Structure formats: C-alpha cells, structure tokens
Image 1 (tube, one colour):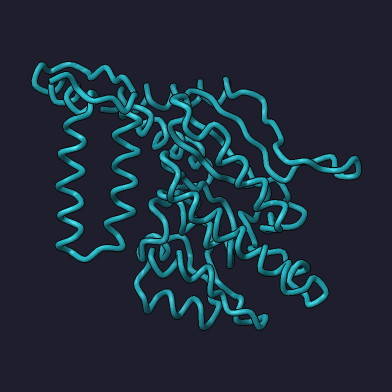
Image 2 (cartoon, one colour):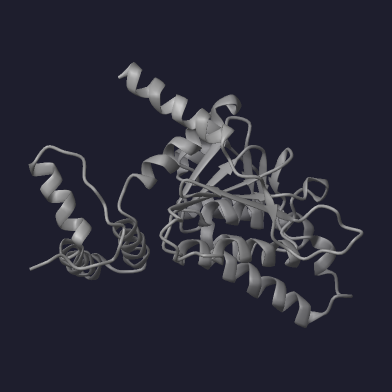
Length: 296
C-alpha cells in the first residue's frame, strides 16, 4: 500500500514538472500585462488559475467572462477529462468586484454581471467533465459560491469560507443558490445572515468542501483526485455527472426512475460492457472513451 501511494506521489510530481506553460485567455489592453485567468492542460487535466491577486481575485465581469471561456474551450474534446480551478495569492476569490456594483454602473450593467455569474456557476455543473476547486485561502461571497458550485473541493487547513454581503448591504442571494444546495439549510442561513466565516474543518463537516489538507500537500492531493477521475471512462463519467445533477432536483421515486434508466443506458455503452468484462476477466479495462453503443 505504501509503495502504491509512493508511486502515485511520484506520478504527481512528474506531472507537475511536465505541465505545459500557462496561457492567458482574455483580451486585455497594453496597460494590463497580466491576463485575469491562466489556462494549461496536460494528460487530460485542465488547470484554470484566477490571476488577479492584487484585486483579491474578484469575480469582475471580465474575470467571469474569461473563466467562462476557459471552461468552454474544447469542452467536448476527448482529451479533456477534468478541470481544476485554483487561484494565485492568499485569497481564492473575494466575490464580485464591488466597484462594478455602484449605481454609477446602472441596472443594465448589474444585470449583466449577475447573469454572467449565474451562467458560469451553472456551466461548471453542466459541462461533461468534473470540476475541482483547489482552495488555499479566503473564499467569500461569489468566491464561496464558486467553490460550492464545483463537483469536488479540496482546501487547506487555513482556508475560510463566508458570505459577508449582508454586512455591506447586499445580501448574498445568488451565492445562496449554490451554498444552500451544499450545506444544511440552517448552516447556510447563519452564514448568510451573519457573514461569519466557516473554517475549513467546519466547511468539511457541513459538506461545503470534500477534503482538508495541509498547505504543502494541496497540489498533490488535488492532482491525485484528478488522476483517479482520468482513469475512468469519459462518457461514463459524463453520464454519471449529468444524472447526479438531475437527481438532486427530483423526488425520491423520480430519482430512482431516472437512475434506473441511466444505468441501463450505461450498460449499453461499449465502455460499460468493457468494464464488466475486464472485472470478470480480472484485468484492467481498456476504455474507448467514446459514447458508442456496445455490439449486440
């Protein structure tokens, strides 16, 4: 077991050393040398990095549009298996840029900001590959919403999570959509009504995040999860993610009906039958990673 873990750790370190160079994906003027987000991809794992630490990685309209572009680029490619969202600096994201929310910007602009934010959050849940939040620091308001919207979230022990909008006169109604679906109702309401932060361990206890790790193990632990996802069949993962999202909005009987139908569909896939044959034959499956039906 120790040897297996060592081998996985070595694999992660090798992956870190062979990452392709970061590329910015938003248009910016000559006075803005740094793009708001950075993107890189290697062995099926796409890294999206919020890259505006001087502004606490605020989810400005430009940041949201850049994040949306990074999520959608080649999203249906077989080469993409999982997405990791992280950030530079001590703040994962402080939420919306409040300078964009003054009356000077106007109602139409405000509507565009929140519409784009909602589009990005739902996109994270609707794209066919899992999205992992890798958090090292503070995640507040829409930044906390971003974490709650991801399929998996790994955070360091010193990370904190809060929805402090009520304290500046703007109740965190849109973050509440994602957070209220991740944590119990009364925990969500306390966060929303008081703005008090949750520690990483309390966030784990209440289901806002998946795992808490020491800071020096954050990268390795997150990549290990990503690599495990990459080992599964892409169409099976996509089918499973979409089904789970649908089940969360259904009653018990409807959810079982959906799940039963999808499992039959899963068995009809080439990779569904390959996995079963490999298990029976005591070998590793060889995935086609194509959403193709099995031969009758």
